[in-house]
Length: 290
Image (cartoon, rainbow, N blue to C red; front, side, top):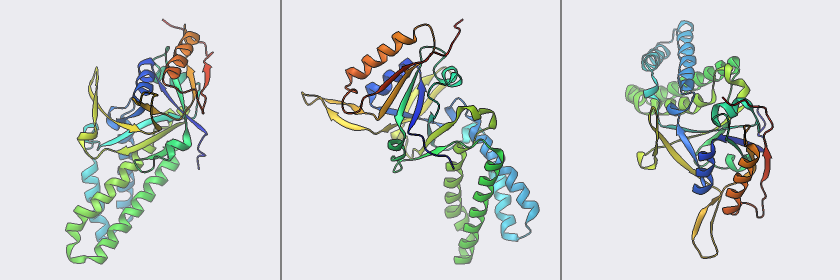
């Protein structure tokens, strides 16, 4: 069981920090458009392996029917088939060179430390979960998912035997997809273990709740996670939400000190140094540029 850290860090570049503070929200990016979009396919591969092993182990006709359909549905899965799962990535590591390189663009980046309990309290829109890297734990999760799914299907077949085919397609499949897609972002290749990642995972059920960020590879869908304290200034003008930021690190590079001063000024402009002050740190990790 992973203990929730007091602070979870979100690494970003200078434009990302500016957008988060000025907007008063975090972005949750479509799973297919993350740097490691293959994470969903990794989970599908584990589930396919479990289905194929289970087919060799069981001879029950109903199980065989369900497992055949699962294998047929999942085998051709590609990134474009990923459903509307949106993810915001965090880590318990405040000052990680790997994270600076991957998400802070090397130098000029920031690590924003959020109150982890306040992120967990967003359970009405999504779930905060640690990423699982251990292959044995991943396989057990998939086995458990398959056990629960087969048991649920048997219950449907027992309760409504006449309509089992229709129920299988409409009820059981919907239930299974929800479970599987919630589990998929929790599992990652062991090669990424050093990231110590946590993820906030949510569904976006309508395109009206999506925005789109232009990238070199095309448009990347995202949705806003709006939380924190709503407020107005002295003139009654709406200000961006006050996010539960507890720490701010400037990344390694040629100007980490001045970058931290600029980050502090941005926070001051949006009144972050009131009841809950923000701790400031400049990374001293040696980083060679060029």
